[in-house]
Amino acid sequence: SSIPSSSAGARALEQFRPQELSSLGWACAAVSVRGGLLIGSVSEELGQRDPGDFRPQEVANLTWALATCRLTSVQRLHMEAVRRVAQFAPQDLASVLWSSAASRCHVSLDRGTDMLFRSVCTSALATGFAEWAPQSLINTLWAVATVTARDPPGFVPAVVSVLTETSEAALYSQKHVPNVAWALATVRHCDNEILAINAAAAVALASEFSLQGLANLAWSRAALLIRDGALLNAVASAALPRIQSELAAVCSSSAEGEMDPWLAVSLSELAWAFSTLQKDEGVFAATATAMASLGRQMDEALGAGTAIGCTFFRPDAAAGPAAGSPEAALAGDATSKEEPRIVQEGPGWCAIMKPPGWEVDTQETDQVQAASRGRRPLSSFLQECYGMALSRQKSLDYGFLHRLDTPSSGLIVAALSCETLLRLRWVQATNDIEREYVVLCHGRIGQEGLVLDGPVRTDGRGPSVVAQDGQRALTQVCKLATLRRPQRSTDGTVPAYSLCRISIDTGRRHQIRAHLAHAGHPVVCDGRYAPQKLAEDLQICPRNFLHRWRLAWGSGSDGGPGPADADLAGSDGGIGWNRRSLEVRAPLPGDLRAVLVALEPEARADAVAVRAVLEGMWEKK
Image (cartoon, rainbow, N blue to C red; front, side, top):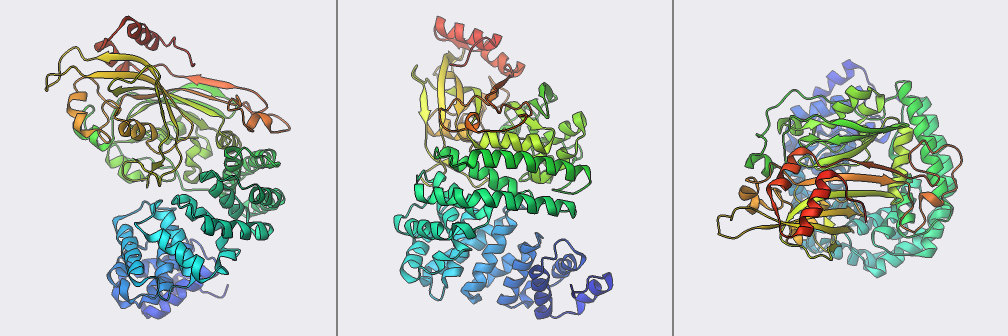
């Protein structure tokens, strides 16, 4: 409280020496001065300084301070760390990596961050982690998992080996136990020895963890499909009272004009983990009730003007690639003059038919980049239709429950209130939302269809990849018809296509497109996953042939513990709790219908199936 925050004090920063500026930034972060004038002025002053004037420890302190205060102006400091990586002590390197990973929660990953992590990991491996304290190793492990979501070659096994051989004490730290569990699961590193140490520590310290820590522990076991009964029982026993105390704390903070949405994330992760591992222990009812209560509190906070996230973004009109052009398809864009429309409404929610070219913007969307590529934010449509405060909250994904690739079309569910959004997220977390798609892909798929369960790895930037170190993913493909082009291709062959109905049990980024491409049946007109077929595909199809035609929830159809088993009191808000089931459908849009009409069915049964799709008469099997 004694730190000056006047504009005069801020202007005086230009007289500060590098060490003094570094110490001031560290002090602001240490007392949690977020978004204030002083720390903002420190950030601005750094923009005028040469990073080379700061010593390695000062660079580390400043990057830590800016990330802690949720400021993202750290790229120049990261590049300075890359340039002088050999001069940094291990503790300072770990601090720089932590700040980079923490900033990843608020900005898109940049090339400088990639260079930083490669440099540090390579340097650490080369020295055999000499002089690296266990705490620095654990912080680095967490940072690597957060930023890359995969294991740099040899890095994680080497870190795990050092940790298990040198000291188990750090692995029993209250702070580190959940972070180690989460990081290992994120990079899909299943080492029995360190997981056993981690589980023993988790059981012993369960009552001391925050709810986020407990959620990370449960999530880690679910992600690795490890059914550790002792650990899950300990997490459940500690989580039930913790849910109530942290919910009360959030309600208190909202009364003071602040609200952090991370409690909702922890509740959702707990529900997902226990549902995935088919455990209950009272977690379903507790998380469901808490999410509904938290949602109501958020609605009250928004009504009172409390900010939960960033403001609504409306870009200027931008000329993107022409519709149907190779540039548009390769970029993953599909411009369209078609407007979204509301296809169904319920209490507190709506279902939107999203045309191609519209971006389902979330807190991870780079709005400026999307606008420059001609993508239109779906949140702008939601805002114009309803005007509710939630559609301006970036940290709550503007109310959208899920995403859909920009060049694709189909159904999107959006909540019109925070309470409904969190209720729906709980239903989604407990694996009780069915998603079905109509897809035209290359090649002949057999009548038996396909079950694609390869793990999918994604870093949120480039194409997703089917790889063993990816996250669990399941795509079920039911072939409806085999079709052919009426003309031969340039190589003299007659290409065949499979019209499919596809359902997914997980929602990894580009999951359907990556799975089908890996199986040798890429989606028609997919410039990202089948660029070699794009030129000919554009002759028959104007854009990515992938359409989400059906959504349903609240059925409890998976047979495991889920929404239908939770003993919930009161109204379900019309979203599918209390054994209710809702379904929304959207027929195939006109541009994709025209593609099917232009192709030739191989057999009579194929013609019947195509006609049923065109008329919207086929049923879920």
